[in-house]
Length: 464
Image 1 (cartoon, rainbow, N blue to C red):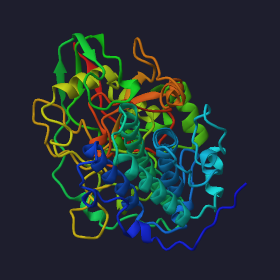
Image 2: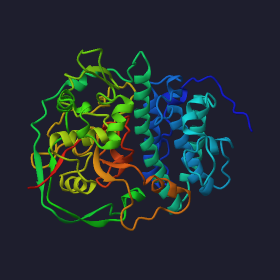
Image 3: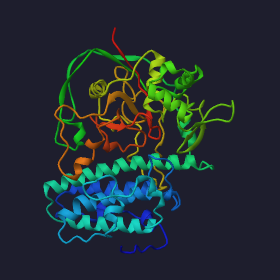
Image 4: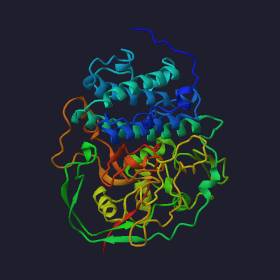
């Protein structure tokens, strides 16, 4: 095994641009739009790590999480493995052991360390991983300086969306790491910005006529394979909640004994309540009978101050129990997609609460919330609010392939298809989702007991 040489972490690479599109304006860049996107996405990953110390980047605080430095390495591994090794003649890998060390779950390529051991990787140090990123980015620049094969460009775009997924995961993971720290440090300052805003409008329901509808991705732009093929589904007439469920409404569920009433819960959900000791959403805490507080990426806030904001970090089981308590249900993913398709404007144009477009560089940009915010009414009175951003919305749909689905061939076929078991679909994105990453047809998925992701609740109902 080749030794991995590390130097003391200076974080100079985090303080300087990863790759600078403005420095490479030659007409020889055949995929200029893709190149600019590559530069932007790679820089965003480093920007997210700027508030972190080397020690912060080592922490893996729950089974779902990975250390921040592993995210930086694995997203780089993707480009090295699936792009450079196949499409850049003469490419030399940065380190031979990185091929298996930073493999996540692609069994067709190599064995890999157990996920739970990622926090034990004290070496390679952060500085070596940053050097790895620079090595791969330099090679990608050489690739962009030539005519790029169509398959290579397809994989580059997939790699960029893969990295954006890991940017969101990094936010989940560092929030959980700081929550697990007894000091409860803040990732960013300004918790008061989360408590400012108008009161949420009374919850209503928007009605949709039933019938035959086509759902799934159709077009030439990027989508994941699990969003296709487009197909027809029959829906009964239904209603969708006009906004997300708030912390104040969820607190009413808790105060009515929501976590003590087995008749509200699915059997597996009730088992989770008892075995995990759930009494509230993740990151809610209190001392004795005191008032509830909520830990955010910007620090602690009183639940009363956040009562108008969407409830966040609930499992599918909690979302389903709340719906049962409310006399409603969760929407299907087809119902959600039809409602989102009929909403005016794109997610980004609607000014939704996303991650992208803001750099954490201390230069005075308006800070992103990093937390769901109260409904602002941006969607208009005839369409549901907050369909995009703020929180991923649990649906009652199991994560399975659409009719006619076939995973792509080769190792990349392990990206989505192998997880189509025991998972539930979520839709819409969250406050830490990059805006350019989301689509109306985007299908996220998690197992029903997970709570560390930014997930919340929208109610649905059948029409009388």
